[in-house]
Length: 193
Image (tube, rainbow, N blue to C red; front, side, top):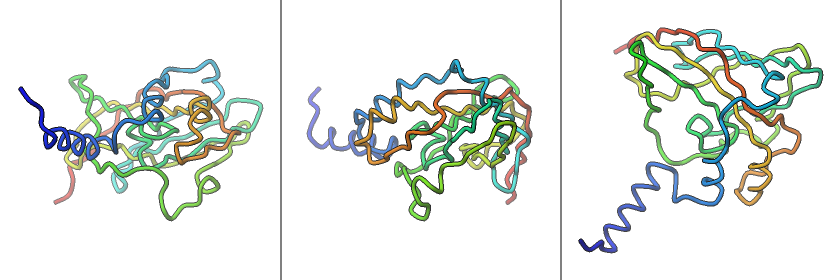
């Protein structure tokens, strides 16, 4: 079977549309980021508090359990899909134990145009304090029912530092590690018609 230039071009176009472009050294390195609890995971406690139907999001509490201030990042456009650090992984499992895949989206990602990098993305939590925010569940609109949800925050400072040419110069003072919440049951109501 011959593969024509048109077939090759269509395959590249499809990959760009689905995955935000052809793989680069940066995206390949992102795929190697370990998404398991890091040795310092106890410094940052994550708790899923509830589901917020008006935002199709979960409310997550980030709590500093260490003796030092922790600096973290809010999600970039694509963090929920693992395209940019930090990763904001929301795992959703239905009542049969089947994982619900991420929803579809465009391939454009990165920094939001109306937010100043990195000042508007970075936040600090003092020892013993907490920060609560909404995190998009990143699932298709029709997803509804009873689910088990778990949230994981991952930032790998070594990968970010090795990718200074990626177009996103990450601050060097961020907490680096990976930690996850305990699983929690939520109910996602059917969308209003």
